[in-house]
Amino acid sequence: MNDFSVHRIIGRGGFGEVYGCRKADTGKMYAIKCLDKKRIKLKQGETLAINERLMLNVVSTGEDSPFIVCMTYAFYTTDKLLFILDLMNGGDLHYHLSQHGVFSEQEMRFYASEVILGLEHMHKRFIVYRDLKPANILLDETGHVKISDLGLACDFSVKKPHASVGTHGYMAPEVLSKGTQYDSSADWFSLGYKRLGCGGKGADEVKQHKFFEGIDWQLVYLQKYPPPLIPPRGEVNAADAFDIGSFDEEDTKGIKLEPKDQEQYKDFPITVSERWQNEIAETVFETILLLNLI
Image (cartoon, rainbow, N blue to C red; front, side, top):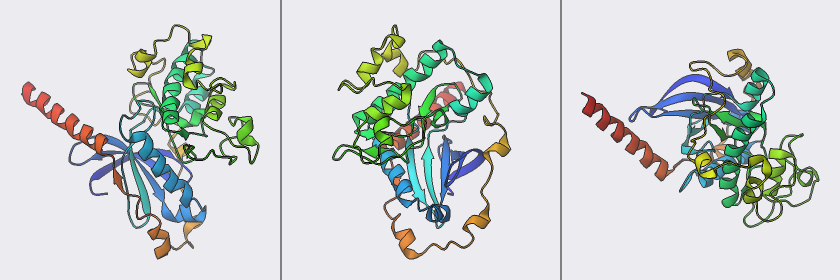
């Protein structure tokens, strides 16, 4: 934790909170997701926490995606599991829908296009996301979006999943039907309530729908289309700071972490080498620019 200076809270999940943070040696801004081990134990969420780290490693290694909240580091302390992630301080689509009202067709096309490329990145790595909803689509400070929270994501490269998980209202029929196997096509239902993407062509079938006619997907990937909404700078983009809330420590007062609880996290720490190298390169480049200006 000494490697990072932690700033304001920007979100909260089932097991902990998310803060803005700055890496001490390079000055790089990140989000730090802090999961409380006692709260994880209370809710029997160990498998979810470990799975999220595994899935984040898959999507973050090699060529990562501009449309997924990716991980650069993961580590732990005595009482916390910590992810160092892309900083997304612009709130989520659920919040902005509540403030903005219904999005226009053009606005929705922008967000859907970026989400499609995020899902495509996962599916190429044999990951089905299983929790696509507005609250899990985050905006950065420029208004571009990324898919977040991979705790329910699943590798289907060896065996197709059959668990009924996700958020009701966004779950495909086969996911709702307990015991029925499914694959990445379930995510396309969550995106658009249609069976697009189920015919073997996946993302290509979705991209070819007339709703996306005229879209240049290379420009989408390069984030060249202007976002319809730019979040206000310097604000907590939630209903208010109290909406993010805090945990009641009384909930976990009686929970004790045994050696076996700690042992299951022994393989949790990781540094994604490509992203670490990019962080160093950015720092060097910024230093050179600064020296040239002096």
